[in-house]
Image (cartoon, rainbow, N blue to C red; front, side, top):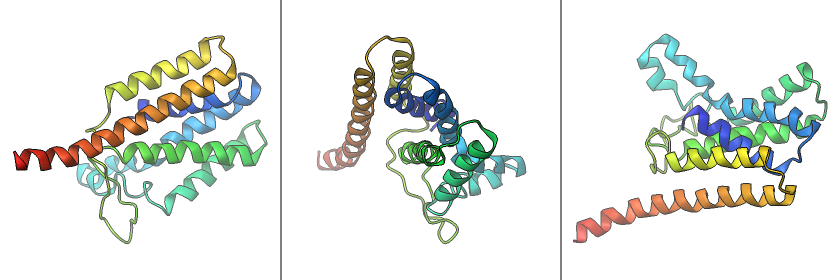
Length: 187
């Protein structure tokens, strides 16, 4: 998925679940950086398109890299930032990294979860690169969470509703894609 979708979906969660104040200001940057951390393998483009197509969504999009990315992100913000609750930094770093991988699971490219042992990619193949409905909802959600004077409980419900809607939406697109082929073959 595109970087804007990763950043906006993570900010939707953080702004919806953490009340406005100093803690949100301190935890939003680590979560947003973590939401982009798995795309560090995009730097393989510096070595050419062949390198990029071989290593993108492999090196940092696998089960072995996830704990490392979470730990590195939380540690960088702990040692160089002003927020010193390491457990919360780990939690919000995990949130950013895990949501990144869940979103990338929906695109056509696929992820090599077991790299370097296997280059087999896994994907739900429900969108090409980004989904405009997902992107728009992820823009509106954080905007309302940051600008509206609604109670925090409402903001949590809004964020959860948007995420739940898109879980159902992407699963619906996935199952429709499977069954549409069966329906067309039988027809």
